[in-house]
Every structure is written in C-alpha cells, then in structure tokens.
Amino acid sequence: DTAVSQTPKYLVTQMGNDKSIKCEQNLGHDTMYWYKQDSKKFLKIMFSYNNKELIINETVPNRFSPKSPDKAHLNLHINSLELGDSAVYFCASSPPPQETQYFGPGTRLLVL
Amino acid sequence: AQSVTQLDSQVPVFEEAPVELRCNYSSSVSVYLFWYVQYPNQGLQLLLKYLSGSTLVKGINGFEAEFNKSQTSFHLRKPSVHISDTAEYFCAVSDRNFNKFYFGSGTKLNVKP
Image (cartoon, rainbow over all chains, first blue to last red):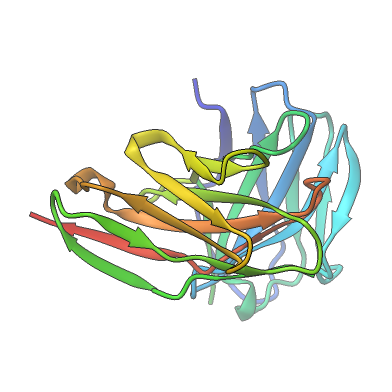
C-alpha cells in the first residue's frame, strides 16, 4: 500500500564510495522529485522529473545523477561521496498540476 | 526568488492549549503557500494549502492557516492540540507553476501532557 517508497532506509558508507538510493511511487504520478534535508532540517529541492524528463536541476554537483527508468521510478546515484553529503534524502511525487507532493519516508545517509 | 522563514525552531505547549506556528515568506511574485507535517521517521504530509480565494484555509487534523498578503505571513493555528500533534511542521511556498518549492527550516511542536 506504500505510496512512495525509498530504499534503503539507512545508508552508512565511507567517503569516496559510490551509492544509489531508489525511489518508487505507485500513485501513477507523472512528476517526481529528490530533496535533501540537512542537519538543520532545511529541505531543499535537488531534481524534478516529469515523465522521465529532467525539469529542474538545482545547482547540484554533478556527482549526483538522477535516473528515471520509467515514470514510476526515480533513482539517485551519488559518486565519490563526501562528508557534506550526509543528510536525509526524500523522494516525492505529485499529480498534475503538481500542487500537492507526496513524500517518501526518507533515506538517512551518513558518510564517514 | 522566494524564501521562507519559520521564526520558531521549537514550540512547547501543553495538551488542549491553542498553538500558533509562524511562517513568513518573501517573494517578488505571487506564490502559493503550504504547510506540511513530518512525524518522526516519516516523510512530509500535506496539512493545508492556499492557492486562491478565502485567506483562511482549513486543513486536516483541525489545523487552519491564514494568508496575510500585507504581512507576507501564513501562520498555522490549532485551537486545542493533542499529544499526537507532536511533530515537525514545515511551511513552504511555490511559484505559480509549481516548478519549485521552497521550504522553511521547520518548527518542532512538542505537546506535553
């Protein structure tokens, strides 16, 4: 029944590693997002996809590469992880006209 | 560009007391306004939104918010809180195309028995 799901829930890794976070929504929405929530709880949009096409890329380092194999999935791959990447990453989706977003439970990434 | 300021990082309140969580925004264009709630270890859920029409907006769980254009505020209120309202509350604005959402830093509401 989960509307927006993310895996893994927790991710602990070493600096320099490459990791991926998966997101899936079963709501039939066309638009999906990735957000980063830092230690001060600021939630900032990273990417927005509509029907598998990139709409927004908010000055995110190119170590972050989103991939949307179909409109129900938006995965986030991160290369060469840095300490500052430690955060909670939220996936979200929205139906037209994109006024309401449905968030996943978040992935807590800790880079050591 | 838009920005959102939530003046209180934490608000402690006793059960059944009223509460107001403050949100101010800045924008050079017309915006839409939202309040989201985040329960521990969960994603955000929409509480309410202001798009147009009446400036007093009612949401789920007995919450309401009032859009004040002259003061650029969108404060969230509830006349009587429950323990289950303990959560983090985020104010957000978006442009008219819903292309970008800007969130505040959150206010942690702690309801005490």
